[in-house]
Amino acid sequence: MLGPLDGPDMHVAMISAEYPPRWGGMGSTVHHLSRHLVESGNRVTIITRNGAQGDNEKIENIDVIRVPWARIPMYFTRSYAYHALKELEKVHKADPFDVIHLHLPMISLNREQIKRCRSIAPVVASLHGSWMGERDGLVTARRMGEPAVFRNPNDLAILLTAKHYSKFEKVAASMADIAVSNSDATRQDFEQRYGLVGAWNCETVHWGVDDELFTPFDETIPEHVASRESLRSRYGVSEGSPLILAVGRLAARKGYTTLLRAFPLIRESNPRARLLIVGRGGMKSKLMSQASKMGFSDAIAIESSLPFDELSEVYRASDLTVFPSYYEGQGLIPLESMSSGVPIVATNEGPIPEMVDENVGALFEIGDHLSLAEVVIGELSDKEGMARKGDEGRKKVLDKFTFKQSCQRFESIYRDAMGARLIDQS
Image 1 (cartoon, rainbow, N blue to C red):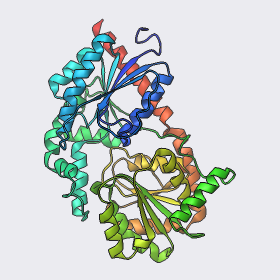
Image 2 (tube, helix red, strand yellow):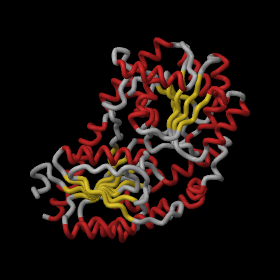
Image 3 (cartoon, helix red, strand yellow):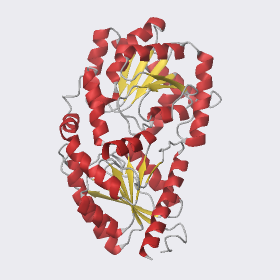
Image 4 (tube, rainbow, N blue to C red):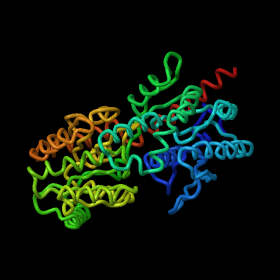
């Protein structure tokens, strides 16, 4: 193996509770980061949870090790930590690691376990969000009347135990050689909650999206035209009517009740508007029941989580994306929409304004269905403005938010961590 600063050949340990076929924001980013690293000449060993259903993609120079974990809400993060660290140490003895990348908060390592990681190699800790932030999002959801807060065992566990598990993310973030937040809002969240200021080594790297997959609709491409026509027909979108899209897990903190409350008001100005929600989770029947009570069950469709290639087609078939979430560490949906040339309406708090502004869409007051309805009606009334915002969103992604850019930043961060470790040891 080349020396850590002499060339691209690094062996990176990627410790992530999500990895395909277990998708999610974390799984997606780890997938793309790992592929970038091997394309740059490095090797990656991913230690993730076992039991996910679906195809296990095999990629040269990426070894995927799946470890046991206790299927208990929140406690799984401790169980997974125990088995992941055990496997990490085993692999390191046979094939030493150059850097360890921990993906928080879905792994809960205590102080001694972090020390064991640091005895192996420099540790980079990605802050995808915080358990306390998740809890705050659920508290907001409860205040806004979201129906699923007390029905989902995972959400209930977060409400009851977030404070306990937050101590593990604080330990990992503070003891890592370099902590990397996925937004300025997440970095500030850790600083304010845990007093991580002064000597704390943390920088922000926004995760990017796949700009080659999420591309704008192009009427000169027959496949785009055929797919758009087919999808809009499937969801009952008539000529000249808008298709409004919302994407994200069907969970309380995603703010779908705010969207449903706004939709009848939106339809007063756009009677033939249709709403499509794409996401997995246990709220589908409840959301459909809410829509029925509000009188628009014929104008809404809810799809299970789609493969990325199908999701990209859905974006291209849509006129506007709405993102009503109460809490995000970063939130990739706005960027996917922008990359697809579709204007985005999103909440005005947390990390969202770091990506979304009036040039690419619009912001509304978090949890306020009247504000959401007003903003959406305003966007739909200006078709030329929506087209312009779609173009600007695509440009902004290409300029600041591609996977390639974020992956290059992480590769540089790994080398910084390795270089600092060499200086400390000299």
